[in-house]
Image (tube, rainbow, N blue to C red; front, side, top):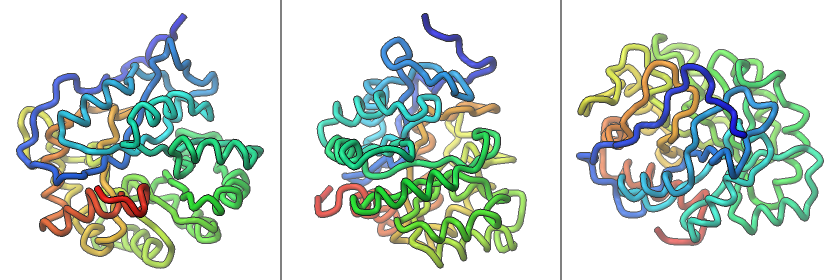
Length: 304
């Protein structure tokens, strides 16, 4: 028996528009998820939310519609440490996907090598206080030591206000760090202010890659990527543009499909593609953001 969705859950946008902006050949969607289907891949009992189904086939249909070549499929928190749905999608992609897993500290070397062979290249840790019961620092320390020999990285999800208490710890980790959604800046605060400046300094000081993703999650004033709006989320644009400008070789982009836990609106993914040239203003910047950087991180030695 399947569990009902969390009350008020927003399903993903079922009929995305065709983007005006043509993604360059080899574009990687470096942050997306699969949910279930629940009947085949049950959600974790300890989950904080119950989403709609969002299958691998639906993800691949979106990939092809948008003109994306490859995906990095990040383990969804609703599945806990059971990576089955994510691994099924990565394998089904036939080399066109990589995975980011959730693992427990007691995982053994053999299991890690099995995940590596399946296409996993990183682990994700959530430090957003509303989504976790406690900051998983001890667990992350143990796991980071185990994954370092594989050349994996750690994907970190946290909010800007919590960086001061976390950055020293993050700096001790012996692997590259990939930061989700620009560290969730408060876009009502100044672009040149202390809070965002601290994040940029943290990225500069450490082996950090930054995802300029999820403007729909960060925006306060919009406008949303709906109803043909080609200049969406104008309040987020300066922050993303600054990251792209300052770290051209260490930025990544992703759709965040199917956009878990949005409360206000569900964006049209075609219009999210049209957001890209607003934040990466030159062809060179877009090529690095969309193709060169994610290929170097997830498919080193391969050409797009």
